[in-house]
Image (cartoon, rainbow over all chains, first blue to last red):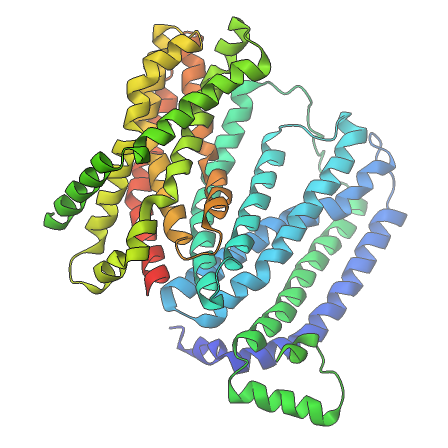
Amino acid sequence: MFKWLDPYAKPETLYRICGLWFPWLMTLAVLTLLLGTVWGLGFTPADYQQGDSYRIIHIHVPAAIWSMGAYSSMAIAAFIALVWQIKVAQWAVGAIAPIGAVYTLIALLTGMAWGKPMWGTWWVWDARLTSELILLFLYLGVIALSGAFADRQMGAKASALLAVVGVVNLPIIHFSVEWWNTLHQGATITKFAKPSIDPSMLWPLLLSILGFALLLAALTCLRLRTAILLNEQHRPWVRALAQQSDQKGNVPQTNAGRTV
Amino acid sequence: MVMFKAAFVREWRLLARQKADWLNPLMFFVIVLTLFPLGIGAKPNLLAEIAPGIIWIAALLSVLLGAERLFKEDFRQGTLEQLVAADEPLFAYVLAKITSSWCSTALPLLFISPLIALLLGLNAAAWQAIVLSLLLGTPLLNLLAALGAALTLSADKGGILLALLILPLYIPLLIFASAAVDNATLGLDYSAQLAVLAAMLCLAAALVPLAVLKALRLNVG
């Protein structure tokens, strides 16, 4: 059924495809992010309750959504790597993990900055905040494990296994944290209940969400290209590529070529 | 089954000869527990209130302490390599390892739990909850610790990395186990928490050994 996908698992082909897609994805990402944030931060009406400080939603929500989206895509790649032993999927895990970790960090930091004026405190042990923090720990675990071995392939395989274990655990962690929270304390600080958001605020938000997704895809392409070059550096096609760019005397499109 | 028995007996012999392997985590557990009253002041009410959390955090730290050695020696000697290469099922070896590590690190905690309950000023109902939650929860600790040990087997800095990987996965266990003891100290019903612990144990017992097996093969092969 998935036979038609096989050629794309070849590192060389995937390297070319990522190279083709990257400029488009990056341009689109920059455009939508610029449009979404400028529109959202500058031109939407202020909230009747929160005033201008709610505008951080245009960065906070997309980062939070895609911090989880990145983890699921990483876990899917890890699953493919483990089950079908596809090398590029292993490298994809390592490519996505740091991006996802940074998204999670952005979501946490902007959430704290938003919480200070609204709730009066930087941090609450709210279920959502806690599970986002644990998500960051899971990302850091995957990153740490992938760098812990002398053998790079070994690290990639082990971190893929850990990513799959993490994704099985994630719902359990999420629900137990939610239950823990309701067990230990009532809602001392009521969360900002979103009254079905006004279209004038919704559109820029949707644009930012799309922008963050495109940025994730673009950066993944870039990092995956680097990973492919790094792991295939002894293959003839990479050597040919390096020679080509040396003859031209210019720096290749990504700095990745230089590591060869 | 033959393999399981052989590996299990071997583990017991090793434990009988190297008493530090199971005595040190136990001592660690007791010492960590005594640090808390010293650190926060010996107020009986406060101690009884935070006791469930303290006991569970100390328990998971002491299991973690012994985790790194689980496969290390077998890996260094080459025993593990031979087992992977052999026809004998590696799965039985993994199960025997996990079972014996539970017997050596978690079972002693159960035996000294009455003492701990006395030290922290808990009543009999709370002690009963501690025993039940330890019985259901500690196998889960050992299963996940084995996974961490197998994943980091050939890593450069295994010990601290193991803790980083596994501690986030312990969070659900910590929440439900300490909630069970918490409810018991308040005289409430805690069978729901125990049921969740049992469910998590069943899930982990079914899946974790497979992941351990995979991780061992990765590290050796």
